[in-house]
Length: 152
Image (cartoon, rainbow, N blue to C red):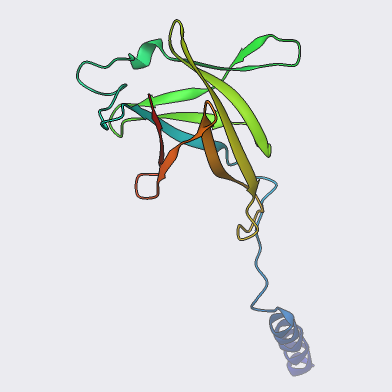
């Protein structure tokens, strides 16, 4: 009887193991929130950094970012200043087409529009940033640094 019970248990384990397919991937996407972030920097037409230079034209501490809501009210946008890597990290809404504003200093504001699409190659089918426009002019993207460069 002991041998029969051992054989039965081993048979159940073997059938369970062989019934699993190796191609099955377990991805828990609903529990993971990955923000949509754009890294941005400003340069002049000669390539000089306008925010993170020794004497910047636009001081990072004075920069404001916001979006305009349906009732014409403004709402601040979360962003961080990365002085070492020399870019501003902006958390964007996960929508196909979005707009926000960067106020570099009082009286100097840029309208930023962006386009995203669902990345079909991502296991979680999340949004991927496709392009950014600064006042209807396309920004340049550096694949190496992953920074969008806006020219002023």
